[in-house]
Image (cartoon, rainbow, N blue to C red; front, side, top):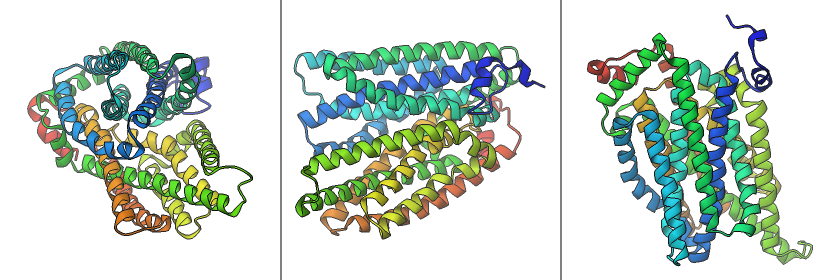
Length: 462
């Protein structure tokens, strides 16, 4: 048994934030650095998205693009599933990342010739954001066993939280000196650094598993998954556990996106009222809105970082994944009840900060832990369907709700909050079912399927 004295200084330092055992610190830090660079690149490229869509298009066009992303994902996700079936883990990551990097260089060249990129780039970055991050967590799920992932994912998730903050700040500082289009090249360079780290992690992981019985059994399982692979969408729809996760994340994103609309409408109405009543202190409506969102984003990001570093690991270790998945739905239920019965700006601010900071920290970590007891095919192919397609469907449902609510039903912010409260009750039920299904999966001994038995084994895991 490993003792505390065998732990390195890095292991002991990281052990202040999670249950890090001897020799685990370096790999956890590498994975955290990996996702840190992915999120840094995304938030740099996100600034380019806003500049292009608002400069060449409009806010209305921006709201319609989620439907376009769903259409593209309907073709991209099955194509990704075919790559999973035919490529090794690292070749898959290298090819997909190289494709996104090549797109950035192409976009930059086209921009030099004045080609309008707003719509294409907006759809592209929506696909990039969902697919590349889902791919990273598939990789992390494949590197770690279930017990390792439950202990160490909180540390890995901190890299994502920190990357979002650093990427946004870096874009703010770089855009003045480089320009909007040049940020595409910065993002491409960051992604190249990220994939180099991925390759190093892959070599390190293969070295630690080489020659072990667990490594041999895992290789057989991956071969079986590839031999029996079929439709990625079909895999989700025929597997109860995966379908429950897909529905849960779809409703979660529906609630969250609608919540952002509710927040925006309350902020706008409050700012207009302050200006009309002469209580704005000389500030314009835009000034009040800008100040509010600056406070909102800062509070959400800071609280999210603190939760990720000091709270997430303790909640998972104390209550387990099956109960931790219930935390965000319960917080969201309280948040929208506050908005429904007490739609005052400060109360709404506190409610949304609590919801989003928990979503970005605890919930983001736990939702990726849910794939730890999955097969190789489920971790890569099915995860793309769930994290990309179903999440984006939630955006479309929210856009449809806002359209109907504003043009046909004339709903107020409180009316939308009432609908969101009902949706959150559905979310609570789905989260409970997912938690129970996770317990069922992890209670049974882990199977070691052969290619001929691959299909029955996958059914037994559902």
